[in-house]
Image 1 (tube, rainbow, N blue to C red):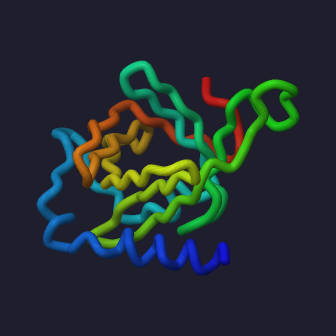
Image 2: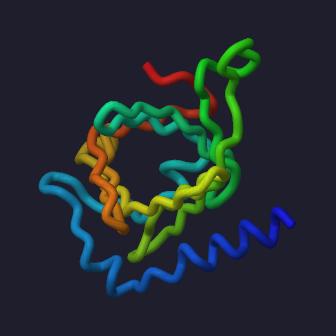
Length: 143
């Protein structure tokens, strides 16, 4: 059942046309990341938007569990847990999609600064753009 669900989510994420993706632009002084599997796979994404802050590990290279670090593995009150799945698609119409188990799907084009240190997530569906995103190797707490 889980494989069927992931496949269905992959198909749904791929339905956004290449033409629609091409219309989305990265902010000034950033470029679109076309090798998302190498950039996000196996990494913890550290990001904040408004009053929300998150640290989510992308467990896999191009698709797999999306794991919220919270206060860390084994924490008695707020342990690390899987909160959904992610899909990273490479190429000219590259995008990153998070599908949360409790509901909600968010897709972005990912833009990098010149040093590939900070990333901007440009929403493909009306959510706010998220700037200042960093990626850390492995399942790790964000600073």
